[in-house]
Length: 457
Image (cartoon, rainbow, N blue to C red; front, side, top):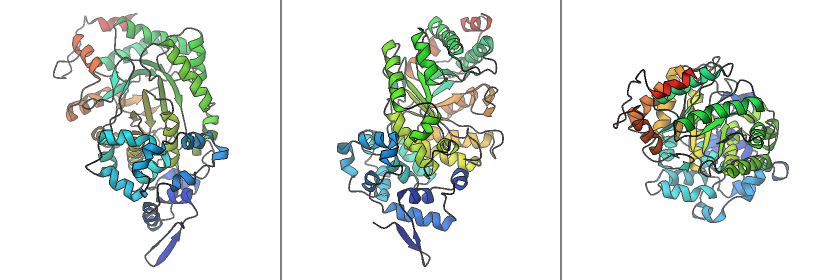
């Protein structure tokens, strides 16, 4: 099948799926930087028209990154579920879009279909969708995971407390944790990005978080966002590891630049499961559009398709949490609030349709053309789309990583506006400790509340 579209009296040819997917992608600075973007809006529309007629089977026959060169491609192809794919195997990309948007397709149908879709198929269909379409389909997908509490249930909205500190000061971290808990945050996890990325520092922070969680029997889980090899070393030394964290990307070469491969992730998953500290979902992955390009490992593929391929890696490990850190890499890849908003909706849609528990760090760097109003817009859209969880950062300003995210106040706002509650187990704990009322209203923290002892010890 020749890939071309004739519009406005002109034929627009495309050299293959890789070229077509890139040209069909909504505009973003990263694709322009790598030289794969459409030259203008006419070529972009022509690519989208052409893409709509591509049979889904072609994505199985024409990998965008060669099978022989890339273990992510091999994982995607070798794990493809042909039985789950059968109901849509006759469809084109455009027909899949109509199918996903139809009234007849709900959460059970999406869950059954997920193993039959490759990341490239899902990335392709997202390129044909308006923002409203991305919200509509993602809102129908329900992905539930468990550790000490249950995440992703309908009617619930979770959050990660991110109590980062520029010197990993225990009292500063403890104060941020207590602050987050008083806003009803922290049911997804309490996760620290360490300033000092060492095994000794990781063990110290893990012990700090475990002490707080165990002392107050909080139904949540801890995570230190260090390199997976540090977490493995911490497990070997008997540290209280709940979740294993790692950033992942959509090509073998990009993952190699992170110092990882699929075998290492499998080793870490097995080590965490052997501890038996909670449920079977023991992995926490973070991703971001542009990571492959920034590593020189993009193979000429557009950044959004590569991001979807990262979800193919994550899916292999049944994670508790997956987080697209959507604006963190910078304006070189997502230039402004509009591009960040579109990318966040794409990422969430692709992850949910592939069967992942998607969260989003709605964020931007200080040199991007974006502000907190842009974050408000994206966070609200993602809330309507059924996003599993968001970041809770004191004042929305991460003083260690030096970027802008979402605050504890933002979580409380969105839960109230959308009528959502934290995870059921965590919600009950909040009520039992007089932090929220039965109707979800936040309660003032008395001066004698036991939690405050954490900030004095």
